[in-house]
Image (tube, rainbow, N blue to C red):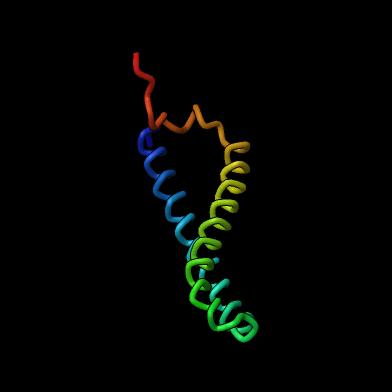
Length: 90
């Protein structure tokens, strides 16, 4: 495969990985809320639970994505296998 195909597959794979991690965190945080925190939080505050869980899942997935990407980039020579997404203008 050429560099362009490698770049496309990497971007698609990284996007899929990020979506899956976000969904897993969302489900885990929602289950945690439903099983233990729902009875502790007052009813007026429960309306904020879903948006906060959603934002927390996105934030946590971003942190995990960055850590995995940092580890991967240490092991792989980026210039050897991937084509730059944005080319410099002359």
